[in-house]
Figure (cartoon, rainbow, N blue to C red):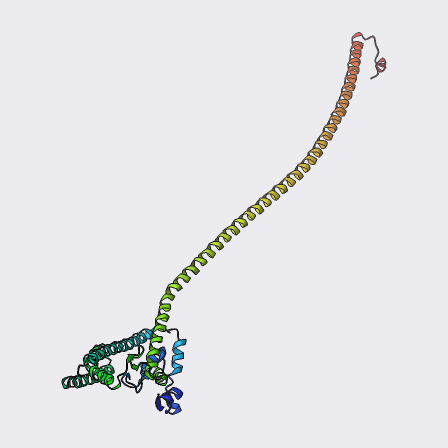
Length: 373
């Protein structure tokens, strides 16, 4: 059963007695005063309070459900090693109870053998050894607690192993008297609980069996066993997740590369089509320019032809005009020339006539008018 203080701590928090302005609002889940085992599920110190398996008293660190929720929502969840430490600690508790179970089976076997042979119990010398071992164990536990408070974890763990050895030796010495006397008094067959290591009477009343199964020690070790399996499975999956994440990441990268290649292919095809369209447009423009040059050339040719025709016509007209002028000039020249010749002949004739007259003196000058001069 939890104490009243522990119940109040769980319901109201460990700082329930502080004033409102003194509340420790700055405590985070990763603070050293917070119980890391509790963040991972539960604190083992709370399982065996007031039982034979009590673990050095109650836990002095903070157990806060809100801090556990903050840790579970944190990005560092299961990345800081709390779960592995918790698993190792639970496994150490299971190893201890398994040793207890083995010792229980050994006691039963020894008691049955001694009962069968009628052997006596341990002597007073064994009882003295048990007392000495108990004193040594108590002293070592005190030293372990001091080392733990000083932070010397490795030394404390080494001394804890020594304590476990001494406990095994002490339990072995105790086993003879307790087991044999129990069998001698009850003469009943016993068995060892495979969960918590407690001794049970075979064929005992169901009520006592139920009380044992619902007891804190039995339920505590049962919870530890189930939690160990859950933690192993969770850590195994967590370990596999990076590989799965790497695989998924590679697959995403491959898909992205494939999409990138497809985009590049589409881009190349688009650029090629664009280049072809551009070439086709250039060809069309060139054909258009060629048609335009042809139209202009044809237009110039027609214009030149018309101009040439006009020039040829004007030249022909000029030639005709010049020819007519030449003809007129030739005709005029010929006429004037012939007229001049006629006049000249007339003059020559008259001159000859005058000359003849002078020479012959037979022809008077009055008759000269008859020559037509």
